[in-house]
Image (cartoon, rainbow, N blue to C red):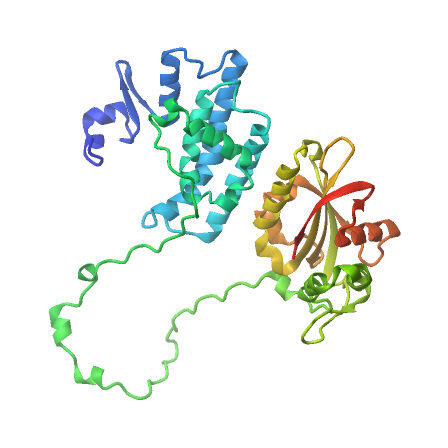
Amino acid sequence: MEMGKTNKTPEFLKLNPFGKVPTLETPQGGVWESNAIARYLARLADKGLFGKTAIDAAHVEQWIDFSTTEIDAPLCSWLYPLVYPSHFPHDQKKEEAAIASVQKALKVLDGYLLEHTFLVGESVTLADIIAACNLYNGFTKVFDPEFRKGFPNVQRWYMTLTHFPHFSAVFQVKDLAKERIKAQKPAQQPKEQQQQKPKEQQQQKPKEQAQKPAQQPAAAAGDEEPAKPAPKAKNPLDLLPPSKMVLDSWKRLYSNTPASQFKQICVNGLWNGADIPNSPTSEHFEGYDPEGFSMWLCDYKYNDENTVNYVVMNKVGGFLQRIDYVRKYAFGVMCILKNSEGQFPIRGFWIFRGQDIPQMMKDECYDLELYNWQKLDGKALNATQKDLIESMIAEDDKIEGLEHVECKVFK
C-alpha cells in the first residue's frame, strides 16, 4: 500500500470514507478505527478475549475506553510534538498538562494493578492488549526510569504482557526508555530553498543605500511605530508587598541546623527567628510572617488505600516532583505514618507565599484534589496545632500517636 495514493482511490474510500489506516476489508464491507477492528477480530472466534461473563465483557469495554481516552489521547499530545515537530509545534505548557493527565491515568491503573495481574479476570483479554499497545510509545520513548518509579505495577504488567510468546510474535518488543526524548526544533530549510533576491535586486545597489546617514530623521507626526512585544507577565506572588520573612533563609536554616540542636535552633527559630548555623555571611532568619505567608495542613483523603509502604512513598514523591515549579514560593513536609490497621496515612504541613494555595498549583496539579487542605491562623495557633507543626518539622518518631515511617521535604 502506498500512502497518499492507494488510500485516496475510489475503491479504498468505499471502505473508509476518510481514507485512513488501519482499515479492515471484510466480505460485508470495511471496518475502520483500530479499536473497532480489534473488537471485530476478537469476536470472530471465542478465545476468551472478552472474559467469561457479561460483567467481564463490560469491564473489558470499560478498560478499552479508559486506555483510549485517559491514556492514549494525552500521551499522543505529549509525544507528537517530540516525534513530529514539523507537524505539531511544541508548547511547553501543553506538554506539562499532557504529562499530568498521563500521570493521573497511570496512577489509577497502577493502583488497580497492585491487586490484579491482568485488567479483567485471571488471563489476558482484549483490554490488556489494547492498553499495552497504547502505552508502547510511552514506555519506549518518554517513560524514563525516574518517571516509571511512580508506577511499578503498570511496568510489571506491561513487561509481563510483552514477553508472552503470542504477544511478542506480532508486537515489536523494545527496551524501555533510558531517557526521555526531548523537543526538537523544526528543521531549517536548505539554503537552496531559502528565499533569494531576484538577480536584478542583487545587482542594483544604489549608492545612497550603501552610504547610510549617521542619524535617521525623527518619525513624522502620525507615523506608527512598530509594535513592541508585550512584556512577560509576572507571577502574582512576585507582586505581593515585601515580607520580613525570606523563604530561602528559612530553607537554609532548616538545612544547616545540626540534628543535635534542631529543635532548639530551627524549630524555635520558625517562630522567633534565628541565626543560620555555618552561614558564611552570618545570615539571620527573621521568623515566620503571617502577613506575607500562610500555613496549611493537608491530609490524604483515601488513606484506607495506602497499604503498601513503597507505593505510598512513590505517591508522595511523585506529588512533590510534579510541583517543582512552585518551589520558589513554598516549603512543605510530607509525613508518612503507620496506624494499627497496617495503613499508611499521609499528613503534610506547608508554608505558602501569600494567603492562599498558589494558583499555579490549583491550575496544574491534580494531586491537590486528593488531599483535604486546612488553612491555619498563623497569628493565633493553638497549642495542639503548634505542637503538631513542630513534630512534623522535627521529624519526631511519633506524630499524633502514630508511628512516623518516612518524611519527604519540599524545599
